Length: 341
Image (cartoon, rainbow, N blue to C red; front, side):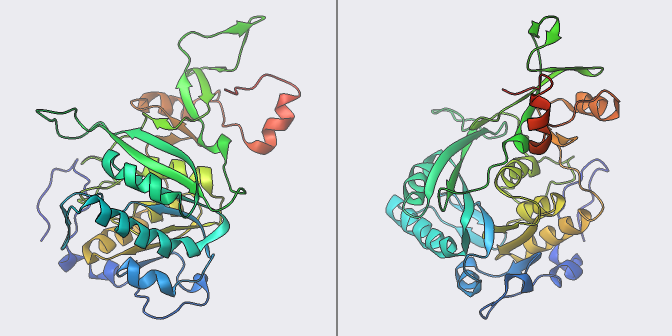
């Protein structure tokens, strides 16, 4: 039976013995798949190195990969042991060369890593794709170190298959409170004045300081040891895919990529070798049928951390500013100031 938890503890930790219905929803892919739609919006239980060769080439629009970092760590019943740098590089080449054929010509790939593996992944990624950027995001949790700096940052490498790729800038702008408003002729300059405060929608940089690591009182939290937040994955999906596109995760873990893709009206496909994590992924996908909320992404825009009260006020206020979309932006530029940074 599941351990008794505090009512405020929303951590998903359903054991395999109690989650057979979720496991039954997973599929296995042991033979070539001719049409990606035959396995779309499913969780594949299996080893990525065995499954990926059976999937159709150029069938996905976006790949989000969070491979094991080069650390000794146990994931359920699977243990990943720290390797020599040359061996980890070979491991990286193996899975990158496997997923590369799956990405369509206009597709993008994002790879998560820590500072140490980043040195390897950034170099190897360029052998298969065109590297566009390295995102560094601040993780506020982590153990201190007695003889070193605490590791409070992780990297995400962004690459594309060609010069033509999707990047929806307006969909990933960050709403920030304006501390020192600048006016021209008494009117706001590049910011909006609302009943709930003064805000500016700023272009996102490659340093993300607005991410909260999932913790026990968040509905998205699971007992997975290295779970990424839904907000982090939402930034990637909104920037580099469109509604209806296919998002693929070869190291699905507890299902964050699939869950966020579903919430944002994308198709998804993920592979996970651990039955326990597949269970949690399917449980979260079921929850997403009725709960589309992504913490930190409210009213169609991303907000700074620790701004929940402001988000609630903006949503309920009639004067809440709306995100600027591509189609409306051009028309508005001709008639009035809009917040462009």
